[in-house]
Image (cartoon, helix red, strand yellow):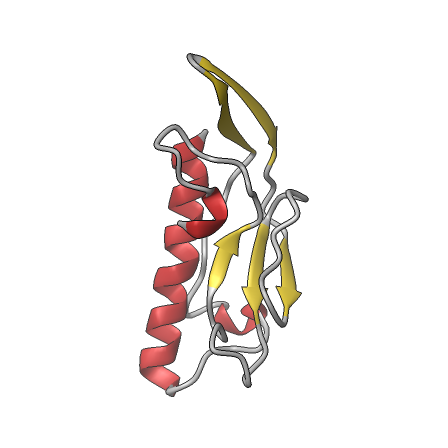
Length: 109
């Protein structure tokens, strides 16, 4: 299911870039993306490596949690920084600290 998670993340990021290009700013709330910048996100679970040739999953979901700084906690969904004073304003990440099969934390993709 890793592909679904990354596809959803890519959809959100593309929509945010288009919104920013058209308005000159990022939205404080992702509901502002609809309907023109509609995001079709679906991410049922995320798989992560637990050892050599073994993996586990945890529910991912598509919920968005609005934050002023990124502190992933494995609660699933995505984190969106909606603080205009933050250097990360307008960025969205996967709320997962586990590593993918390439050894990269999902929250750092």
